Image 1 (cartoon, rainbow, N blue to C red):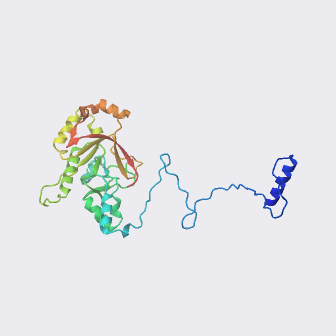
Image 2 (cartoon, rainbow, N blue to C red; image 1 turned 180 degrees about the vertical axis):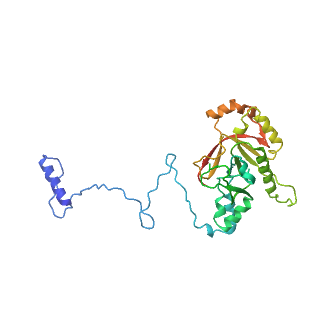
Image 3 (cartoon, helix red, strand yellow; image 1 turned 90 degrees about the vertical axis):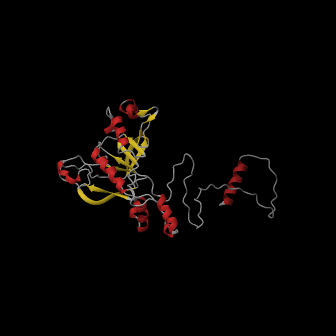
Length: 316
């Protein structure tokens, strides 16, 4: 095929007219003129060390999409026990867990004030005996919950009622933030905080016969029950009594007393309110002005309070 292509090329050149070129000898021993052939091929995938075609990786760079990391680690059980326990404890991050109660009704009886929650317990409690034991060292308080009679979170038929259940919400009182939805009910709130003080485990080095612990350290509440003319004065009174041991107090911009009906459980996320948002500016120049002290917010508990947005997300 190559010789035919060269022969056709020479015929075409002879027909095009005389050209100046070197005279070549017809000696059979003379080498044939070199012919260069350019071949264009499509690039093939790089070969992997095993001999099979490697997967083409997405280039990494500031404009390239982020690639998810590995989601499994099959060699984890082979690690030393001390290292596994350390990894488990490092996975117990601070959470924001929500509580809500149904509207008060005379038929509730003893169930009045017992909370419900759609927040999930840490996943480590359901992984293995080793992981559960490590998690129980961190989450030392188990709050009893009532269960609704259906999967609909807004089910509230008077008298028809929430069922006793064995479900509890595990909490770490030192790092978890308790998110209370709905209006302010003084008796429910004080009873809940007092219960946390009784359940707070004695600190290391303190005898079990000592006084109760500090209880809950971080509390978030809706801005709705405080957005009245004497909201700041009421909050100051709470600061001297029931909120005295609170280390972080947050008001969030969500007024409903129940989670969104489309949220079937998962994560509560608290983020600092955006200062350039319209609702935040309206709050600051309106009812929220009474909570201001200079350029910041009034002290509630042990530190200045914060104002945040809340979102409800799926996941653990």
